[in-house]
Image (cartoon, rainbow, N blue to C red; front, side, top):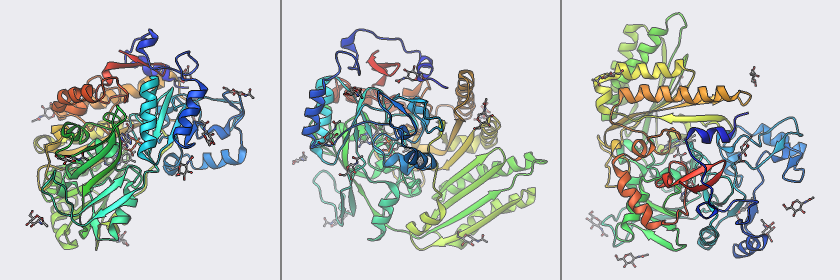
Length: 565
Ligand SMILES: Cc1cc2nc3c(=O)[nH]c(=O)nc-3n(C[C@H](O)[C@H](O)[C@H](O)COP(=O)(O)OP(=O)(O)OC[C@H]3O[C@@H](n4cnc5c(N)ncnc54)[C@H](O)[C@@H]3O)c2cc1C
Ligand SMILES: *[C@@H]1O[C@H](CO)[C@@H](O)[C@H](O)[C@H]1NC(C)=O
Ligand SMILES: *[C@@H]1O[C@H](CO)[C@@H](O)[C@H](O)[C@H]1NC(C)=O
Ligand SMILES: *[C@@H]1O[C@H](CO)[C@@H](O)[C@H](O)[C@H]1NC(C)=O
Ligand SMILES: *[C@@H]1O[C@H](CO)[C@@H](O)[C@H](O)[C@H]1NC(C)=O
Ligand SMILES: *[C@@H]1O[C@H](CO)[C@@H](O)[C@H](O)[C@H]1NC(C)=O
Ligand SMILES: *[C@@H]1O[C@H](CO)[C@@H](O)[C@H](O)[C@H]1NC(C)=O
Ligand SMILES: *[C@@H]1O[C@H](CO)[C@@H](O)[C@H](O)[C@H]1NC(C)=O
Ligand SMILES: *[C@@H]1O[C@H](CO)[C@@H](O)[C@H](O)[C@H]1NC(C)=O
Ligand SMILES: *[C@@H]1O[C@H](CO)[C@@H](O)[C@H](O)[C@H]1NC(C)=O
């Protein structure tokens, strides 16, 4: 078993002891009394939930009781790999890694289940008042606060030991606006206001009905108004319209003082800047966001698979290298790409050309096909045109997994690096798969060839970003501690290789190595200093904390307990 204890040792965090410098913790005198929790529960109209881990039904020992229910357990086990089981559960998160691995599905009900890094209580919030009650309770009682929307976070930022969690999944308001009107902006085009529980595919569906689209993510279940957009948000339409944050007109949120605020170009403009790229769980609990919408375009998509032959791996990798050599041209043509590479597979699904016909995309890709033919790389390709963004999205993007003991890192490779050095870039990809890691590559250039980047807090490296490989290490769960360290070391080695081919760049705040000691610089780049100033101003007591969030260096987590560093 892998222990959170050991994970935390890695960060070099020392144990702070004075109670006053720590958040209150369960089973210590500072923890709020039962009466206080009951009173919070009545303030939120009975919407307070005592957290029970999603796999508790597989265990006879949880706290001082049995939560064992073989029928439920079977269901939970069967659905553990489904993302829905995390969205729809008050404390479920996608990646087991961040739960402390202390309550997984099991066939041995005698195995103890403990909360680990799951929160103690959850407010199933549906109103601004519910959120205010939670924020005020956490601040006044010095309780650690977490915010969970879908639980997608790769850095475990939507869960935390000994905490009260605000669950935003049920904020489902939507307002479709034909012409936006607000004195804070000259924009008068179409827009949509979305409550913070909305997820990508449902938004694409709801807007398709009125012939509109937004810049959203590629994965159906990712939340939109939570971590995704506050971290920047890249997606299939980014080559045309920039990152999701570039399209924000307004946020509504509850800040650390418990006040409900509007942040836009005129109101709370510092906060507005910070919310557009400075990361989730830092500035307040966002309850809704208003973004620009665009008429839905027709799209063409290519699906390209390179076939691996174990007798000629060089040819397979040269095929990938050829694709990388063309990548800058595709970005210049406004094309987005999503590709998966494992040791013996390459699937580019899709290369999405918005507003282009099959024949236009075929023409753009013909030099690639010629090169692959010349080199003798076996491949299959299929190019199809769809009348709307949604129809293309539904055919061209696959669902994704959950319930894995997985650790993620990534690197943003700039346009200039691919131009100057695509062979070295491909070599770093190869090293990654040879180390046993899977790669998800994004070809996404939001800021150079049509997509407009606004003045936001997004890491400025995105202005010339081109390729974002995300690489994952998996454990099965039965490894020893040393296997665990080896996994993290492998990730660090791969990071080093990618840093070498993309000097001076950084990574994406939502998809990064949570243990990178240089996270502040790598995630936020030149924006960090101003972000930290704003953080100290709007949240002086650190009501909002998450690992690698702005200002998190002021805190240290020791076996789950959060103390001043
Ligand atoms: C399968 C998969 C596909 C992905 N695809 C993309 C993609 O195409 N493009 C892209 O840019 N990213 C993508 N991501 C990364 C994604 O943007 C992040 O995982 C993001 O954090 C998810 O946000 P969430 O609110 O859904 O998740 P959560 O895990 O619930 O929250 C993430 C963070 O935001 C905070 N937060 C949540 N809601 C709020 C709120 N209302 N107010 C303030 N803070 C809040 C949480 O506390 C946490 O810190 C993907 C991730 C996965 C797992
Ligand atoms: C909160 O109140 C509701 C309704 O009275 C109750 O069902 C629920 O168990 C309470 N939550 C906690 C944590 O006590
Ligand atoms: C279990 O502990 C809770 C408090 O933590 C207590 O209220 C409850 O009575 C206990 N149940 C049993 C069966 O001991
Ligand atoms: C995580 O698990 C380890 C052992 O499995 C345990 O010692 C530690 O207390 C747990 N941490 C939390 C926050 O529960
Ligand atoms: C949370 O609230 C929503 C909306 O009221 C409700 O449908 C859902 O059942 C609640 N979930 C839990 C676990 O209480
Ligand atoms: C909307 O903006 C355009 C230019 O950006 C302008 O021509 C038009 O008059 C505006 N419409 C309204 C109703 O303000
Ligand atoms: C936002 O600011 C404008 C003036 O700049 C003001 O008229 C308006 O009331 C403010 N709105 C909110 C919700 O604070
Ligand atoms: C190409 O893709 C489309 C859509 O997925 C599918 O209907 C068609 O059969 C595919 N054609 C070939 C030759 O694979
Ligand atoms: C771990 O489990 C997997 C299958 O779940 C098995 O193949 C492997 O041999 C196990 N490893 C050890 C060290 O037990
Ligand atoms: C290309 O990448 C290698 C690392 O593999 C690096 O040493 C070299 O400096 C890079 N060259 C350029 C022109 O960026």
